[in-house]
Every structure is written in C-alpha cells, then in structure tokens.
Length: 332
Image (cartoon, rainbow, N blue to C red; front, side, top):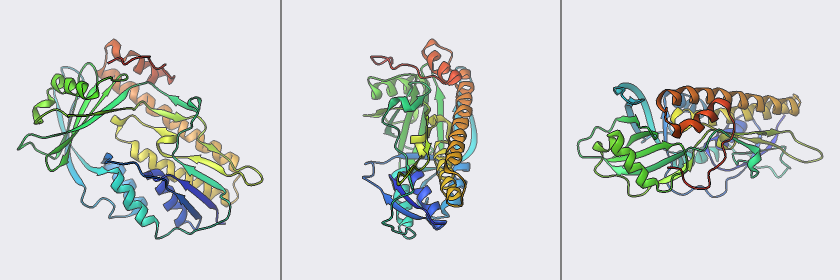
C-alpha cells in the first residue's frame, strides 16, 4: 500500500529517507526550506562511505578530497600513532545538493493529506531533549605550511580538550577542537590549543576566525509519534534532531543515515499493516539504546585522556546521562 509522506528539511537524513520511501513506491512530498549557507565539512570514514554507497549508489562523492591516514596522540605523555584510515572530506552542503538532484528524478507528487511527517528538526521544548553535557566544538580554517603532507589528519589532546587538523586540499586545513564548556573567544582558544598541542607547527598561521557550537551528545526523548484521527499525521524525527553523536566518534553521519533507514522501515511496515503505535515504540527504543551505548563509549574514551576537574562534569554526564545545567558565563 502506498503512503503519502511529507519530508521537511534538506539534510542528509531527510533526503535519504525520502529516497528510500520513493524507491518503495510511497508518495513523497518534500518541503526543503532554505538550505544552510556556507560549507559544512564532513569526515566520512570507511563504514560511513560503505553505508552511503549502499543507499545511494556511486557518484555522490566524486571530486572530494581523500585522506589516507590519521595520526593520533591520545592522552598526555603518549607518543603519536599513525595508522591507515581512508577518509573522504566532503562538503555536506554539496553532498545534500547532489542528493536533491537525484531525488527529484523519482519523487511522486500527491495532494492527499500526509500520513507521516519526517523531519530532522529538534523539539522546540528543551524538556524534549536529553543533553549529556555542555561541551562545545570550536572550528576554523587556516593555511598549511608549504610542503606539508595533505593526506593525514592529525589529532592530539591537551589538558583542556582535543584538537584535530584535517587537510581540505589545496593547502587549506580545517581546525577543530572540543572543550568542556562554552567558549567566550573561540579563535583565541583555538590558538591556545594549537600552541599547547604542538600541532600549530604545520600551519602558516592560526585561524583568523572561529565558531563555537554545542556538541555534547543529545537525544530526542520522543522521536516518534503515530498518526492520529481523523487526519493528524504521524511524526518521525531523524538525523541530529533525533540523536546527535559526539563529533570525535566519526560515526555521526552514519547514525543520521541509520535513523533515515529506520524511519522508512516504520512507514513501510505501517503501510503493510503493522500497528503504528508499536512501530513508534520500537523506533524510540532503538534510538535510546544507541544513545546509551554511545555515552558509554564517550565515558570510556574521554576518561582515559582527561583527568582534570575541567572535565569532571562532562565525564559524569557521559556516565550517568543527565543534563548538566548551563553556566551563566563562559568557563573556558
């Protein structure tokens, strides 16, 4: 049985869900809105690349920058370790545009009321989210020194947080850092971490500007609700609106794609006769279980590198999953 579905948004998860549903004969109506401006660098490792290719086929990643290795120094006093890790550096905005172009060839327009709405928008009510900490990701770009090898990502830690340098190709480098709380001066803090880690040696200069965004793991408490009567659409939240992973894990994009797969399966199963209430409960349980497992991974990983009091609240948030209150002022 064919179902009418409205997809709101134009992120990778929404577009993938629309692609899967259209391929299964459902009538998909897309409300894209205005795409976010500017580049959105994504680092896609082997498992994510395999998943993306299995869903969309080949061609989406043509022309992207390929990294071959990663060098990691995790924890003070530890020597760096270099290992092979094929990775694609992708502009998320370009990838989404390529998905939209491909999706337009298979969409079936319908004026009938939607049975389901799929969105990546997080709930407006803060109480609808479960935030495991308050750490922030700092990000800026800077030029590499002439002659620096551009196929290896560099990761290091200081007492304050981790720092990663990712070559983007053509002499440019993405500089990212995770710190345990809000940052008043993101660019200044990046410069400090570059100096403390020693990674600044590969750059011609520090980033002139930087942004700071919330990056602690986050979960939608109720990511699925069944259709109501007479014509109230069911709602499935996908992507980062449903579950957000810590950026260091390298699995955030893959998890967003998995929510799209699961949401499409819910709609498909309901159309075949499975009760929507049971399907929504299953969807919620699956995401909550994944979130708990991710928090355990974060607690183990960060617990080995950050032993100062600055990280105590973040480690507790990962271990116990509660929301640490926001401080009134920047803490770093």
